[in-house]
Length: 58
Image 1: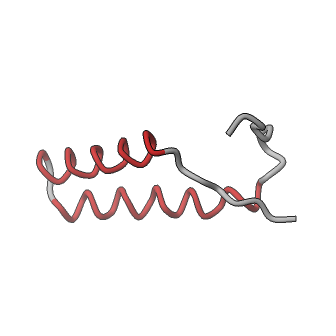
Image 2 (image 1 turned 120 degrees about the vertical axis):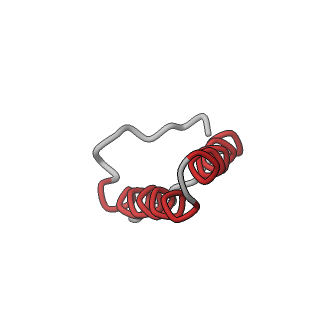
């Protein structure tokens, strides 16, 4: 059974802040690239659902 991968509000805010930092201190294109890599990494998580324990407290 596939699992959903959910971000906490804090994690989503951290990603937004990371994007803004990279866009400001490097280029918006680099921020887009990093965000795309993060999204790609998240998209693989459901396929490897047994790689880490499932948290019951979330």
